[in-house]
Image (spheres, rainbow, N blue to C red):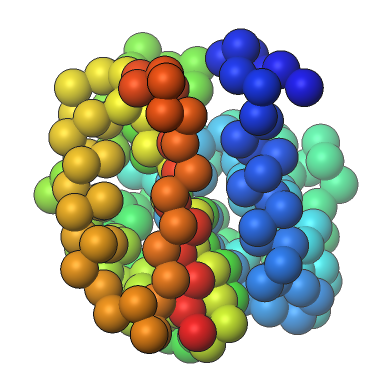
Length: 190
């Protein structure tokens, strides 16, 4: 089945499949890059009324858009939308999380002037790993089609390659004959 990028694999659907293998009702999840709130809504519905989702973005426009998405999709009232950088996650989230999603890049529909940056993405991923519960999952989607996205992706892959494979399993999902297409990493804690 093709998607908007013309790829045979629907990367977004595949990401959700991975998340659903780890996340369930009553769990806590974090959307580290709220954007328009689509991942936030997916996480909200997955953890249900007894769970909780924390979602981060640095743009007020994202919070406004995410609120509309959550309402229009009929999500339970289980989300805390936070106007702050994802690298400050530990100021807001204390306990372990079962899932976290990073969708690096810029806010869809924006002027693309604000993007995630290596300086905050790396500390956010490190904090996410510290918060990740046993049996938990992080998904990091990378968009290498622009300079910062390419550099950010390289940084993420280089870092994840150093982690102890007996504690953390990192799997790269990438279309190898389309180097500028989005790709993602599945990070699972044993």
